[in-house]
Amino acid sequence: MGNEDKQLEQNKREEPLSLLSRSLITGFVGGLVFGFLGIVLYFFNFSEVTPKSYLLRSWITAEWTDRWLGNALSVVMTGLLSIGVAFVYYIFFKKIENFLMGAVYGVILWGIVFYLLQPVFPNIPPLTDLNMYTIVSTICLYILYGTFVGYSISYDYNDTLHQLKDNEAQN
Image (cartoon, rainbow, N blue to C red; front, side):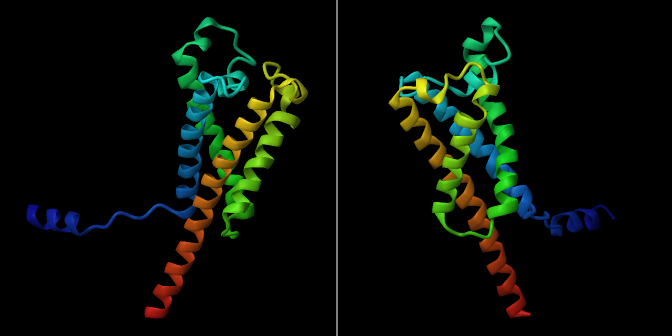
């Protein structure tokens, strides 16, 4: 009986993650990576703002937010918020298999964060008060982020469709 259980366990396949789950994971990883890159831009003075500027420092003025813990927490928070961003892309744009849509999505996100939501984040100066290095660097970062998230989700969606069509053709 014990050997039969082991054989059955060995023959079991793991269920693959759903397309939506993979998209949300892509969003989380993209948020972590590009949140960290935002901190690098700030560290090397390419940007006046960092993810902690609007995620932590807008509401918490504790001293620890200026240290590595504040940076780490803001990167994790960026990853969590990015899950929602990826979900929105998944719902509306997953069928568009073109990297330019992701780049446009990144520019739209930049406009939302730096223009529309600026009054919500008192730690971020108005767009007219930001220097040109900050504007260019953050737009580029958001374009790269949008391209990563958008094209990854679109590619995964279209690849899954092609695999399903191939499987149907074989049967």
